[in-house]
Length: 430
Image 1 (cartoon, rainbow, N blue to C red):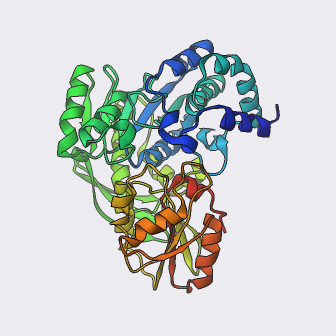
Image 2 (image 1 turned 90 degrees about the horizontal axis):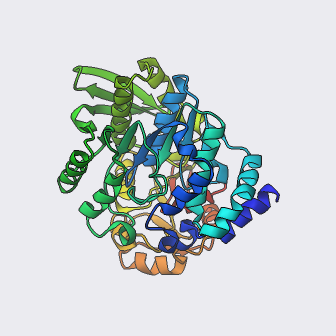
């Protein structure tokens, strides 16, 4: 098969969460175990770092990969979903995996696909592990898809487990309380393996402590060891003054990921680096400084408070749940503009009613949707928004909405696009 036909096969034949939602989620990891067993268990042939969390896990994964890469390690990076190109999910030192590998792997695994009827995500996890093993990487940074305990990635035995935070998302799958969600995320904590918690709240702290005791895993709360004392912006870069409590030392880091929420993520990253150094990884302070200045260049991360146009400014962000959008609204308060134009679209299983209460009533709204079956219809979104006094027009496609916004926006206005990873992925960057 050609690469294009192979992708069609993967997208069309396999249950895919982005397309159909919870029906594609398998509540056990036996398929992934069997797939990887048929490949000779590639996940045992490289070291790994496992990242989970409601928000921030993508940014933390990319920052850590950039640091390891800069330190001279051949670094794999597995993330999901992708924005533009399927191969974004599987990278080594910032380079996407080859099209030929995807074709060959899919052909090889077809008998197992027919036998096990795995999900799209289960196949892509096995694909990533096989690619990393074939390419003889030194380490892989592995981001969970959903939750942790029953996530397909959770067959690895990592050097380190990192849980960025716990918030409200995927409640229909992970549970209807923060404690239940935390229990699922805590499932990535492994026997005798250090586990880092980025942000902790009263409702979840005990869950992590109980799980760590059960696994005899050293538990580290990153906020007890690092905090951001101050931050500012310079030339679209975020400068964060971080205090290392252990050393009573201050250091200013410059990040090319300018979202203010990165001040939370950097704490998890720095604690992860510290724990890796304890384990003997050769990561120098200069490696961290250098990598954080060019994460986007090194790893290809996009969609995090990313400016894609000037005059007017157009910002895209993959925020899509209550906590993520709260952070986005905090970011908005730091930005100067004349008028605000918000282009939004969501998938059906988000907590849309609560999200809409967070949004400014004075903005001009453009209601749209991603081109996937799981997307909420733009007219339904408009009806829900009007109940919160959010008014605007509907558009069948995000790029039509963007064109309309640019027609009406003045040079000092701000156009903000968010609500779904899939929506941002469909934006034709200007």
